[in-house]
Length: 453
Ligand SMILES: *Cc1c(COP(=O)(O)O)cnc(C)c1O
Ligand code: SF4
Picture 1 (tube, helix red, strand yellow):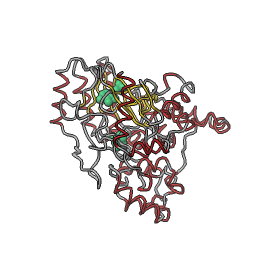
Picture 2 (picture 1 turned 90 degrees about the vertical axis):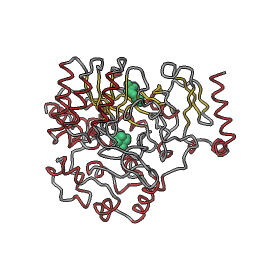
Picture 3 (picture 1 turned 135 degrees about the horizontal axis):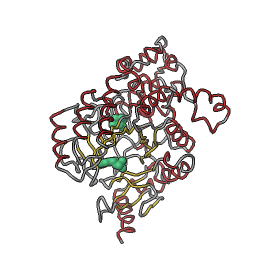
Picture 4 (picture 1 turned 45 degrees about the vertical axis):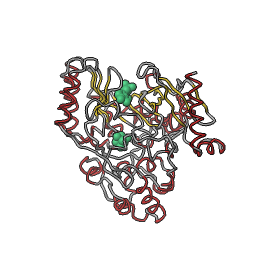
């Protein structure tokens, strides 16, 4: 709470200087501009149960709460979006009411959670539902073991919101008109098999608990997973992944049982000399308000480190001023910006992807704007399971055709990987070349040959 005081006393200065914009945290009753929530009080809005109960899960609910803001064109386009997207709808009232509904077509938050049919593009010929080969590198269900000393554990496939750009759309949330999924909820028996595998894997020191989202685990499950992992002697670090702080901060500030469970795992970790942290996922500075800051004050004062992983998205954050503002704002709340990911090559996302060049240019622009330890590394998680690589560390980049070629000497020695830029950002001639499968195949082979000799 001390922090809030300091920030408030700076407000006047912050408003005068554009370079201090990142210190302004929105604190108006913004949800009251949504006709269906015009009478919702601050107390109700602050309650995680209210947020959960009023989360939007169907187009019908969008229409209902928006009232006169739901124009027929917008709603028809959104319905068309539901026929194309691989993700279900789920969105908290918090994020829903931060969308600028008067300007919904361009709104970066609307784009992330409520896609419009007219904004989808044809798939890239090289897209893959499991772009990172997580299933292939899975020794037991719910676990991906690609790197020698760290693993990715997916204890649930449920999330408090569903992102249209999700890299795990093959499993996350329920089935949609375009994808059948084998999603799963919490399952202690299967988790025990994961813990057994980890007990027998002495090289593993680091566990990412992702999914899905840790906000969907009960307090007992947070503790069960945390204690089971911390009790394995060679495991030194665990991270709970949740987009929650970004899209549902009211859970941190009002779900005391959940927060207490997290603190207890953190304290147990500390008593063992091990690290317990949260990895969260803010992608746009527009997601950040006073509510985010209040959630972070609670987490920070409990001594828990939080890092941020953002996904680079066309029309959402692929702009220097947005990326700088996101980095500074996140840093100001004591969250360490960790990664900005190039968008994975998953279905239904061609409109979200950017070129590798854009990633490299954004990295250059962001570096130097704030502390080095608050500067994210821009990475490309290589399609086919090569792991994460710095965006500028490609071996060869044919920018004309949008083909980059990479190596991952430690993770997959000897292998060569390719990442491709979205076709709509290429020249007309290059777009035509991609239309012909034989020409496309030849371009890819030629690019690879530059590296393999
Ligand atoms: C991203 C990832 C990790 C964690 O990697 P860091 O670079 O340490 O954040 C671990 N396993 C898999 C399979 C991953 O994709
Ligand atoms: S919160 Fe993460 S796992 Fe869940 S839908 Fe969004 S991107 Fe996917």
